[in-house]
Image 1 (cartoon, rainbow, N blue to C red):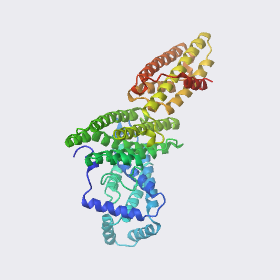
Image 2: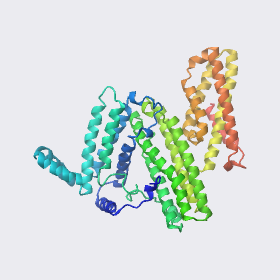
Image 3: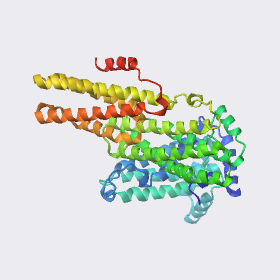
Image 4: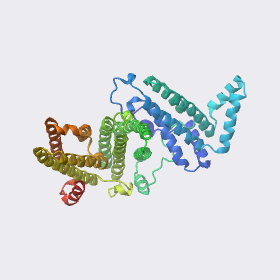
Length: 494
């Protein structure tokens, strides 16, 4: 099968029947916020399966996987199982849930082994969505209890994590009505792009095959954006922040499907169609560029932004990493939607679809300004260093270093996500140095000399980066204005 081709394959007759029956159940379901609950449940179920693959984890040291403690990963699994059970119970109507609870009591307490086996066989058939949901609920309860007990072990080796995840994955994929990997991967209850502008754009595409491909691509991009919407980067609890790793592992997995489709499937399909329309050549170039960007960005995210996030004990560091990762991926997926749709509607603006959208021009303007600010903060620090060291006074140095740290915090949260992947490593090295450089180092001559070298070297890098940003196509003919930047700089230097 071609990479990603399952996204374009229609379900067979038997599967269509299952999906139709589930839709009927969902229409009659009287539960508040049922779309949101079912969507979150699907994300957790898919995430639990994808999380079993360590290639979807941001683990740096893979040579010693068998010797490391998987307590953090196991806790993520346990938390996802507990949350999934809560969601399932909220989707079960009370009256039917009570009947099924009673049935479960009868099966486990009053019946003979033979009778239990007969009922279990019928349960495996899962004749209705309600039965299917109920069976899933009890299976996940068992695994959440097992995970809780495994967490009491002194050391949680990889095998403990692996075998639990394999059992959970089998439970999920064996479910008749709520296996999230069945069909096209889209569920009409919530996989809907509620944008009249995009609907109009897609409807203008005359070729049915191309219309279908563009529709699937846009749906998948919106689905990935919805995954990101479930990540709370502002959480004040370290465990809740680490729970987002399950979603990032799912995004990493589905991004690979998208990349393969963009690099192979879509160009091959367009070639089969044999269209000479320049729009389709433009689409091929766009999706190829997007696939390359996504591949590079995912690699950098796992290597820098959330690297070994499961082992991070500093809340602020993890918050920053999760927030930047969410911001970078949101930007990538939003840009892809807009650029693809703009092929068919050149007048389309980003904010026509996304209220928080930043165009490439706006991103470049913001990044250029903040890179200039960064350089000026370092320039001032260098001046303070020269004067203070000459006079033997360290108080001004400590004050300026504190200003620098405050600016770095601002920059990491406001602009770092806009830095292109191949520049991010240099920034991260400097952030790591600054975060690990103790004040005591400035008290001896060798430490001061090293600090001066690091500051000067990074300022030169920033100046080079500023000049490169100025050369971007979208900034051609737009000179750098210092008025706003000077006002911001004055605020930081107060």
